[in-house]
Structure formats: C-alpha cells, structure tokens
Amino acid sequence: MTVEPTTTAARLIDRQPGMTAAELVGHLSPPPQFASASLENYVPDERYPSQASAVEAMRVFSSESAVPARGLFSRKPAAAVAKPGVYLDGGFGVGKTHLLAALWHRTRGRKYFGTFIEYTAIVGALGYREAVAHFRGASLIAIDEFELDDPGDTMVMSRLLGELVASGSRIAATSNTPPHALGEGRFAAQDFLREINALADRFDIRRIDGEDYRKRDIEGHAVALTPEELDARLAAETGAVTVDRFDAVLKHLSTVHPSRYIGLIEGLSAIALTDVAPLRNQTDALRLVALVDRLYDAQIRILTTGTPLDQVFTDDMLAGGYRKKYLRATSRMIALTTAS
Ligand SMILES: Nc1ncnc2c1ncn2[C@@H]1O[C@H](COP(=O)(O)OP(=O)(O)OP(=O)(O)O)[C@@H](O)[C@H]1O
Ligand SMILES: [Mg+2]
Image (cartoon, rainbow, N blue to C red):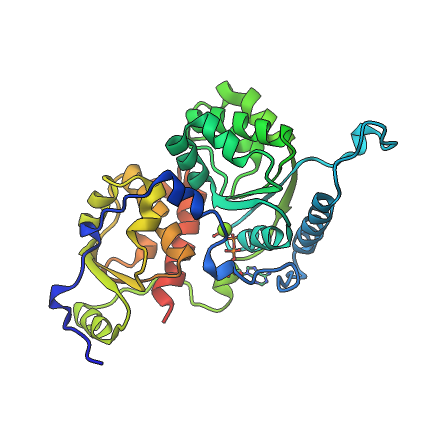
C-alpha cells in the first residue's frame, strides 16, 4: 500500500460535526480505553490508603444497586439507607474514571456513562422534560468530570439529579473538586448554596489521593517537534491525520459546541498542531481543555511544533479558578504527545 504525500493533508478546521440528540445519547458509554476497566484491575497504591477504600466503596455501592428497593414495612431504619449517589473527588490521574467505568460495567440494567458536559448538552438538545423522560428509572447514571462552571448548569443539574434519584436511579460522579466547593472562583457560588448543598447531600463523598498514574511511566514534558521532525512523523503515519495551525484550531473551536468536539475528531488517529503558542485568554484555554479531553478519551495522539503543550497555560491562568482543569489537561497532553 502506498501512502499519499502529506502536502494535501486534511485539516481539522474543515470538519463540521453535526450531531443529533440521538447521536449524543448514543455515545453514553465509557470511552474505549476503559472498556476493560474493572475493580480487580485497579491496583491501589499502598502509600495512599484512600485508593483501596475507594475500590471498596465502589464494590459496596454496586452490590447495593443489585438489591431491590426496600418495601414500606422494611425493618431497617431510614437513616441507615445508603445515599443514592457516590462521588469520587481527587487529583488527576488517580483512576477516578477507571473506577467509574468499572462500576458501570458491573451494573445491570439500563445504564449511562458520560461526561458532565455531555449530559448538559443532551439536556440542551432534548429539552429538560424529554431528558428526564429519557433517563428516568435507569439503574445507573455515571457522570465523569462533574463541574459547575455556570449558574445555569447548577440549577439544571441539581433539579435533574433530584428527579432521577426520585425515579429510583442511582448516580455516580467523579470530579477534581469536592461538591461543596463546586463553582468556587468561577461564579457567585454562594448565591447557589441551596442547589449545591442539595446536590452534595445526595452523594456519599469519597476523596482519592495519589499521584498521576499516567506519570508513573512517562517523563513529565510534552514533546514539541521541529518542522522537519513533524514532516517525518506525518510521512510515517498510516492512519487519518489532520494538520492545522494552532491558532486556526482555537478559532475553529469557537464555532463548534464543546459537546460536538467528539464528532470533530472522530476517526482520526493523530492531529498535528503547528506553531503552538501560549494561550491568550481563558475562553480559548477552556475550549482547548474540552478538545484535549475528547482526544484523550479517544486516545488520538497530538504532534506539535512551537511551544510545548505543557507550557501553553499562562501563570495567570494557573493561578485562577480553573487551575485543576488546566493541570489535568496538561497531564493529558503530556500523555498524548509522548504516545507512539
Ligand atoms: N491504580 C490504578 N491501577 C490501574 N490502572 C490505573 C490506576 N490508576 C489509574 N489507572 C489507569 O491510568 C489511566 C488514568 O486514569 P484515569 O483516567 O482513570 O484517572 P482520572 O483520575 O480519571 O484522571 P483525570 O483527572 O485526568 O480524569 C487510565 O488508563 C487508568 O486505567
Ligand atoms: Mg477522569
């Protein structure tokens, strides 16, 4: 087989994903790299006992979901009834998504797995009432990367999860932020304390400590190539690749809703970003984070020239309310630029 020359390389900015509500809903299962994640193949780090406790908490939570709801004459006092939700809060790369996917795989019945942003996009696409009708009665709603970036999401999610819990659904979530601190530094969270507390009360909150598992085997820097090295890498690529200037991609991302970034990169095995430079504003930074999340889920490699991707978030950005998001994206970009 001959490989076409890369002079007419495809561009990310020419891709315009249109995803229907049905397609968005159809994506609600764990990303391929977590297809075989289980509680058994999660290896707790002995230096951080919270990891073994989290595995145990997930095991207990999943055995409870198998038990039918107790009847009216149950002898067990209400206070002893477990919470309908479990919430894993921890740093990046400690295996939260792995454990969430493991729980999903163990759960029987109608179940969903998606990122917070996917659920909010589905509510946007279907409308609130139809979204409730779609999800109600599910055995498990798994929500990865729970984030409250704006007051509207806070109101909608607190209401939605309340209705779903009332329909008998159980909820499992992961986040880099404990529920009571959601929204802090991003919007006037104190105005939404009632909603945030109502959300938090539904969850058994588990903190997982530890080091970034991805950094256990890779060295801690994103790789930037010279233009010549990039050409050589592109010539050697056998899968579908796009090549774009970094600033053109940022501009393009502003025209696509983040819930559709998954469609933007579908089918690619790598993307090349040329002339990478430090980000100029928070909006671009958050869009890049959303893109990196989807690239990471799909394990699409990133090839770059210019500033290494672990240096694109400025000190100002790293000092603000989105610090953890940016650090997580950095950890993911290191993994994707060093993957071969
Ligand atoms: N203790 C562990 N044992 C086995 N594999 C692990 C462990 N921790 C993490 N992993 C693996 O490391 C990778 C990163 O873990 P994962 O994505 O679940 O972390 P995370 O806490 O969700 O990170 P992030 O904050 O970036 O979302 C995954 O491939 C996961 O399967
Ligand atoms: Mg994760």
